[in-house]
Image (cartoon, rainbow, N blue to C red):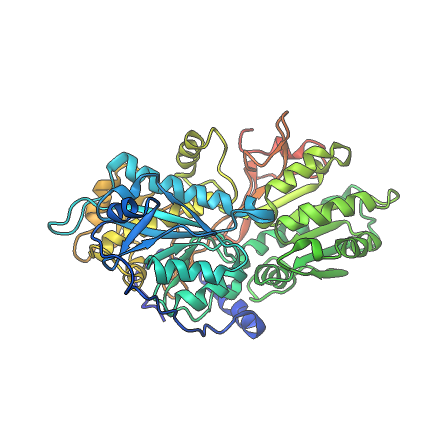
Length: 538
């Protein structure tokens, strides 16, 4: 159990929602964290004093770990960033784990880019940060690894071979639960920007799991509110007959995130919540295998088409846009109104924009409304976005990139707060309990004022009030997570294909438990150009 220290305020309502929701998830979703630690034989390794020495000796990226050289690259771990960081003395190396290849690369790559930008900024703008005592300037980088088919193997390489003090990632909640089997016994901190399942809130992590993204308990609040608004408008417009209830289909992925979203959408874990649970006439759970080609996607699509819903809530990730949506659209009964799609952040991926752009006959831009953690309304988001575009060929930040950017900066400020030259995972975790102090130094994310803020955070007894690109990030030090406003998104026609950018101006305020509409007027979803008319740029 983490010691509770001064944090930014959470609303009592949402703490009550989380605690009640955890009790619903306790059975079956939280896996026990049992496992053994792999003992790495260092007796045959060559002695060393610097990463540069090892890299030169082996002719490939290598690190000096406990005075012995360790090769960093594996089949899954293929890159060390920033480039050239191993040539610097006193480099603290973190790990990054994400879905970087295959069907889910569009989900894991944007957070990797967010973390990459953070570490690049720290190195390029301030040449790292000061050491402790007579120690020279320190530097920071990350070993980038694909979760691949064996995430525990990747975690063991990072935690046991390379002995990183912390890992940013993994991408998915189920993978995170598996990885914690390795990292908790190995005393490695894990901070995720993308694992949103409520099953992670109460996992037995010894204080070594934190996340910058909010639990899906918060995201499903917006989805429920939106469903009420959307179906009410469709009924008023005559799309849904006023003599019957809306027909809602829920498709969800059989993993901890999909099950958590489904449970959040269909239950009311706290009596004070205003958003009613979703009443669905069809709930269809589809598999989560390693090989997506082995799933009988047509049978799942046929169930949906046969039911003929007005709204489809697709609670999964890129597999929905790649395998299910094309089949549903192709088989849809032309005598029925075309369905609306309500999608969480896991579906905000390249496969969706590709399908929509390649199939204009379906006019899907008019029928998709999505939600995602981080309303991108924070005072620091635009600065982050501009720097991101400058680094990545004018591409806007992808899904959840800002949460990984914040996670990287949080780890560096935790180094300062720890006052240790090379802090361990538990020391970094203890320092994270002092990043959300209401009366602490306001510490904005980003390169501006970084060295000055780092120095102040290094003082005895320092406590900071971190302000991220994703929002204030007022952590609950017991759970290691923070609530966040939730964005709405749609697919805007930019002339060269559909785009998620800019986001919609309307969003869900977690503090107020309500939708904040642009100009205090609900979006009129019955208008053909509702998406473009309500974007941030309008």
